[in-house]
Length: 286
Image (cartoon, rainbow, N blue to C red; front, side, top):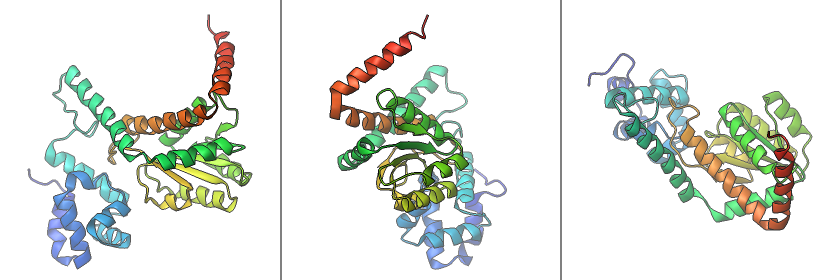
């Protein structure tokens, strides 16, 4: 298929011999693994190419992209155009029947859970559960669509425990973190693990010596260095699939695993509390 104006692969081809040796490694990898590269973090791509993250950044600027995220977006666009993929759901095509489309979406989301199951490390689940179990207060936070996951987590844990607090606004998040103590914890959701607000917030949490559990796709993301425990979710989300349901399903699976691990430490109290909550809520139904 002929390349369109601004096509990533055309830019790589036209400028290949102006690249440094290290940058050529990146170019070669991206061309060969074009479908996979769009899902990789900058650290993952650097590891795969055997170069430094700074080389990836220089490579992106050499192609006239402002940064790695802009490059990934262009890569996803070019890859989709060449392969004829839908940008909506990866494998979903415009001429699919509704049953076919439903089957594809179903398998995408089941695969996200299967990937997450493979990535679960029992020792990390145990460590995260211990932090949450012993915390005086747990702030559930995220940014953008990830805040929805934080709200879901706070809602689930609040059916048994009273110390899970969702904090929505980024300014309120900063204010809340300044009040934390070493006996408090943060449960933070970030698929990329690389937003400026997240890094600033977790850096402040470290100063307060609060414990941090980070749920992310990329365990080597910039924010990971500030986390006490990292829980890795599956689901490949391209830059054109912002807030994909499959990524949320993967994160919710981890939330359910955490909730089950904590609750089974005191099953009788958990059961009694949920019965009280259910009885109180029953009064609100007609």
